Image (cartoon, rainbow, N blue to C red; front, side):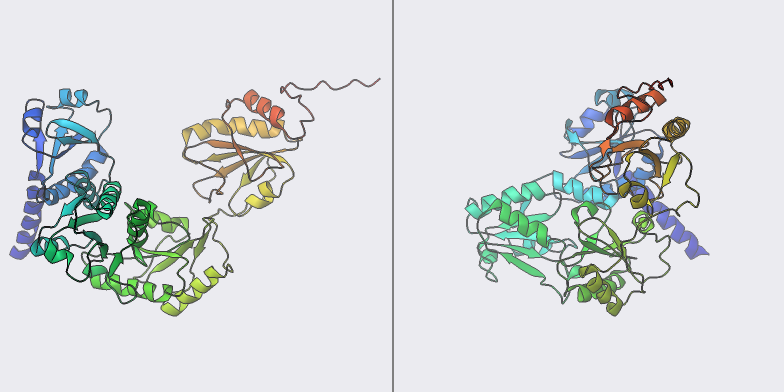
Length: 490
C-alpha cells in the first residue's frame, strides 16, 4: 500500500515539476520577463477553454525538454481572462489557445506547429538558432548522433565551398523536417572517407539489415539534388508515420497499423517493422510506412476497420488514384507478399466506404451512397445537382425541405436531384468537400468535371440555376426559370 501511494505521489510530483517549467506571465511582468530569455513560446489561454486544458500537459512536457535545449527555449502562458487581458489585446488574441513565438519581448511569428509535446519540441528546435549545428570535435559529433532521429552531416574542408552553401540553403528550407550539422574539423572531415560529402545517419533504433544505415551524397553542389537526397531517403524503406508528418507520405502508399511505440516497446515495434521491410523489398515501386493504430483510428474507420483486435499489423493501402485497398487475410509475411503482388498487378478490388444501397429509392431526391454512385450519377444520361451533407449539420437540416420541394418540382425533367451523406460514404475524388452542405452541378456530358454550386439556397434560386445550365433545357421552365405557359388547344 505504501508503494502504491509513493508511486502516485511520484506521478503527481512529476506533473507538478513539469508545470513549473512553464512561466506564468501577466500584464505587469510580460515584457520584462521575456527580455531575460532569448527564445520563448507563449500560450495565450482561457481557463475554461477545453482545447487549452488538452494542450496544457503537452505544453508542460515540452517545456521540460526545451529548457535543456542548446540554445534553451522557454515556454510561458498568459491567462487572457485575468492578469493578462491587456497583453492578449495587444497581440490580437481572439481565440484560445493562441501560440506565438518571441525573441526576447519581440514577437517573431505565430506558432503553426503541432500541439503535442514531441511535435512542439521538434518544431521549436527548428525555429531557433542556426539551421545546421557546427560540430567542432569528436565529442560534439558523438553527442549530435545520440538521438532517435535521422541526421544529416556535411563534412567539408571550407565553410564557403559551393557544396557548403548549397547544404546550408537546404538546411534552412528543411529545418522543420530533419536535423542538420556540419563540420570543418580536420579530424572529422578526413575520417571514414567522408571528405566533401553529405552523410545521412539512421539512428540505432531504426537500423535494420534491409537498408543501409549510412548513406552518402557526393553529387553536384546543387540545391535541388541535395534536397531530393534529404527528402527521398529520410523515411527509409518504411517510415514512422505520425499525425505530424502524415502529409509527407505520398501515394502509392502501404501502411501497417499496429501498436507502434518506440518509447515503451521498441523491440516489439521493430519486430513487425522488419517483417514489413522483408516483404516490401521486392516491390519498391510503393511507399511504405508504419503507424500507431490508436493515433490513426479515424483512417482505420475510413477503410471499414472499426477495431484492430490484436497486435498484428492491419495493412491498408492507397494507389496513385487514391483508391483504397484492405488486406483481408491475417498478417504474416507470406500473406503480405501476396497482397503486394496483387496490388502491383492491379487485381485487387478497391474498398469503398458505403452505406447499404437503399431498397426503395423512388423519392424525387435520390439517395446516393458509395456503392450506387456510378449507377445514379456516372452512368446517368441526365444532368445532376448533388448535395454533400452531414446528418448533424444544422444548415443541411434547414436545406432538406427545400431540396425535397425542388426534387418534386423537377421530377419530370431531365435532371437528377441527389443527396449524399459525406460522413458515411467515400466522397469521389473529383469533389472537394470541406464543409456542409456542399453542392455540385454535374452536366450529363461532363461527369468528370463537376462545377461547385455557389448560388442561393432558396427554391427559386435552384430552379433558375438549373434552367440556365441544363444541357438540353427544361420542359416546364424557360432558360430564366420562368414556368412555361401551356398552349391552349385550338
